[in-house]
Image 1: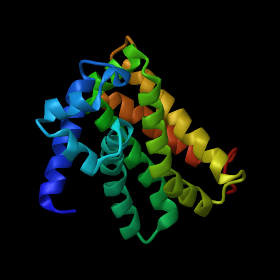
Image 2: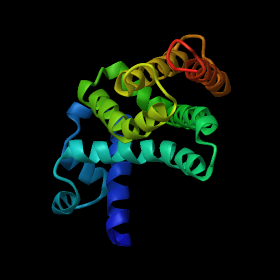
Image 3: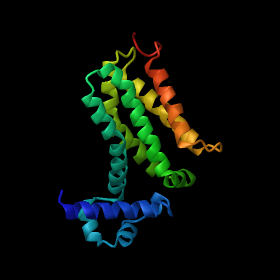
Image 4: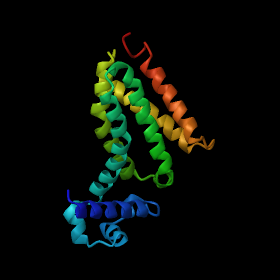
Length: 196
């Protein structure tokens, strides 16, 4: 992708993020996004088919910022079994940092109960992380099918993070990271789930 195209896509995604702070996703139109980005609607359609595609592209950017640095460390480590727990903890820690960074937008989604937005987040997260986590679980000698363990692990950690971040107790980012890391370590070291 050329620099001009990258800049245009970035402007469109930034415009969408700005609009999501004010309006539910279902109420935002392509015209709204173009007006906010100061880009012609024809240009929008050069880059995206519809507003769902730009939403998924925006979410994918965040997910890849979470996964890629951890994956690079994991690939460099020759001791894959011991690196697995660190990989999952790093992904969790990076996820929590992104959640706190975008906490206001996420809270806005929750308040507005935007089902299409929440589905897009869930779909992109699952698509981008599924192969990685299934690979990690397959190396570890799981007792159960990797797909089920992945759903349990992602769902459990996600729900813990969500509850901690948006609870009335106002947990700090570091507290939530420690909690998630302890859950991951307990899960990965549990004889209930893995053959030892």
